[in-house]
Length: 302
Image (cartoon, rainbow, N blue to C red; front, top):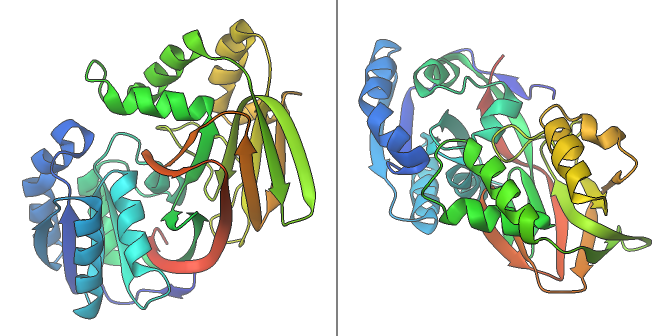
């Protein structure tokens, strides 16, 4: 990713948009230490607590109007909501990881602990960031459906597992009752790909689910989505080969996995599925997804 501009002086004014319950309360617990770190760095800031993702978007727009960096302090869902509010504006997105997965921070190279990540707010580089759009809503990472729909639903409902392991737990639980589905993907209006199996992902970024590199070659600023499909395989192969490899991104070498690239795609299936992105439900199939090139500016490492 090429830098759009360098920040020669630290951003002077920040609006911390905080989801205190993110990551099982991780963001709220870390907030005092984060504020201490920002003061040591000489960064003027104020704190706003979110009531919902919609409220986070309102706070982000307000921050942009006040010429403040809108800093999403929570999980990828909060980052996505703030990014959506800032798209195609002069607003600037900052990220302090405080959720379970923190996958956009991971891909950008932002430290995964919030206090070290404050250094990026002080001396980072402004970079352009594509967004994905599914239906009427945007996302920063990966929008997926099929097996992933079930795994996400289970992960969001469980209270038994905390941290990024919740996604692996969701996948294991979903696998037990999974039955293959047939998906039809139309890419850029003319290429049709039909697959029977597990899932389809429209990937703006490389990773989701707390470090699963579903699309290891995806770029955040190329104006394209990597469309990753997983065809049918025995459940024991999915469990013992597919799932371990996805954490390294080497699953794309398996014959059941196909990676295509498109600016836009329409996805349908032979039974109903909810598409999830950034950890939250975003659309119902059938759905059109597309890339929004350089839709938002984000602070990342130099």
